[in-house]
Image 1 (tube, rainbow over the protein chains, first blue to last red):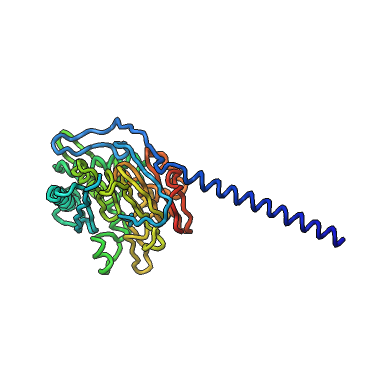
Image 2 (cartoon, rainbow over the protein chains, first blue to last red):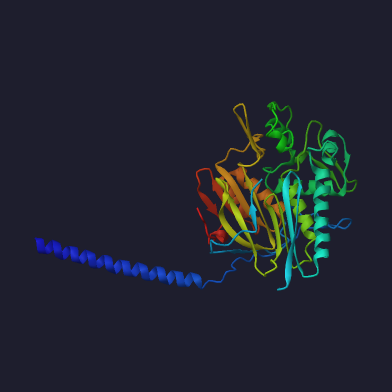
Length: 90
Length: 314
């Protein structure tokens, strides 16, 4: 009985070691994959068929939802970057 | 890109701090300073025309002339046209005719006066008009609002001003305008990097939820934690839900939106906040190119896919 319990414990411990090794390996692999990703990811298509320009003052009279220019956003992964501006909200 | 310097000008306008930056080669400081002065002049003149807290402003005169055609300047007509288009886009969630509701909620004067003076909210509203009742006559350049109605461009005028001022800076290799957190970004910084923007944690204003590196876009946040007040048990904030005329009471505390213009980002953020978490995020995703971060009152964050890899500190 004692021997069986010991054997079972050893088996369980071995399984844990295997699982742990697999997890650690996966984590290292994921971090390598992630670090290899390019920083820039978003490219937004340009489509604007509703804007017009007031010739007298150069002000665009475009609709509130008209897309005018492409947007380039690059989420960053580092925490240490000091923001130049902050969206305080209104 | 090297050899560039960033020239900055800070000033107060529209009851907030404004900071504008341009990147120029060394020796181009004078050109930069002139451009930044122009930006300040634009903010000053738009505020003088469109602030409802200035009795002689054009919009105050428009509100006083409700019921009859008002001869509008190109500026007022342009922003009113944009506001009406925004109202249509948002199904009336954004509505410039909410002025009577803002007054009823207690926001009847400039915010810095609101927090220092005693006011008595007037909760009775006798008439209810919507953006559909605003008549714009482009040929005559007149605006007509019904008698008893009133308009407020507070939810879009600042963003529009940021966009308009930004057009004056577009020839610089990099520029940024931050008007109280309504931010427009063009090109890159003097060192060639993108603009790092902190999204403020609404529960701890000293902290950032995330920092995003951005360029050629605008980012704006709408939140119930600013411009709010409490009077004799009455809680108010400036984000009015036009469907019932009272300050929005959704589970959303703040919405940050990235879009191609500050006016769009401002309107989309405000609308998403009023609509609530699910409808709000759906609305953001329905807007071409828009991305958003929604913070709920229980601290939960909802994010557009494009912002997911940002490093969150909470």
